[in-house]
Length: 532
Picture 1 (tube, rainbow, N blue to C red):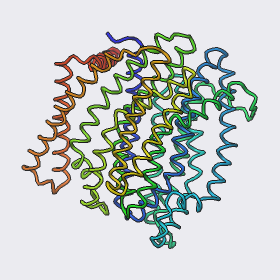
Picture 2: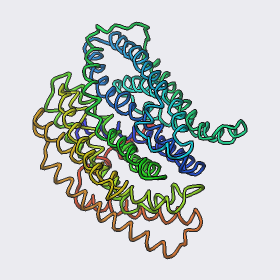
Picture 3: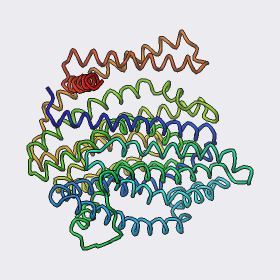
């Protein structure tokens, strides 16, 4: 039988995974529309413009804020009650309105200079630079919207409510898709580039992502107060954690930012190919990595508040094994079926076979680091929960410097594909350093058990990958894949074959995480039957 905490994490992660799956599928639909309707000229400009507020969002609004806010809010809720917790939530809301609102205004006014730094080479292409500036100015307020949404998410997660916060990004994608399609046909009538509709869609989607969480907050009894006191010890603690927290979670996002910057020097297309590949690779991270991390953090925070260090170690160890159980096969699957997956999802409209080839090769290189990305998302917030925020900062700095150095050294010889490879290598370096240092902080994390589980997962996943690849090659000789149903059939049968091989392998090798997942499924089915 699985441990109580393991079961709770799996249950919570599965709820988050379902909601995130809906969001990520809609995100892929949004990306399909973007790549099919717009040229590489337009998508390059949009991706660079969106990368700027997106970087700030990932570094500050979502990543560092969640890592700092959830443990502090949970501790306040447990020790001082709901009234004090609601007051803290209001303080954070008001502080973000003031500070991030100011950042948004500064960003809009200085968009030209910002784009000059990140994509100065766009000025060599007529109209591309000015389009990027316009898109940047329109989308900068998205940063404030997503920051406020992150506070709402943190409050709900602290109350063990995961589904609605995880579903909120789906509303962002729905709003973006609807507005983009509408504006694509509407704006040209007024002589406006339809890609502007993409930027407007981002803002509408951001509003929807924020407002969907309000009913759940009100159900919990959340009471907003328009007060702001920087002297609040809890608010000060959050701000103190957010400083190093921003850097501690920075490695992957700063690496992506550098990749975007360097990709703008590689001609037309690399910015879009890198972004499209990373979005595909990020699907399992969102489904599994973020789900496990979001479900684990409140549990770890509760154990820290109760000074139960042994339970912290056990929770982190089991969560890491669960993360690898989910992400190792996903990584291998994306590598072995990269071309057919990219072709199925993206090849339509203005996204050609040449675009598919370039994107699939980048996807392979990004997917190498998938397991490490997900593990980092779990480990970094743990340092903040245990009160050691400086460690991830130092490690993140080392990894960013390493990645930038490798990129600058080899960009001229290996081109933009090296950007994806070095990002993956940097993620592994980040994980190994975090894992080593966390054990120094809280004690051993059952490394032998983790290594044994990882070894079994790699073996089973390789068999799965080879089998699914061979299955696809066999089906490709039978079906010409000139029709969508033929392409769907070959890809999904290949994936199904891989999943079957993985299940058989996990059963034969007695991988405990697989048995835990089955136990949770059986319990849920049993509860469903009993409730009928």
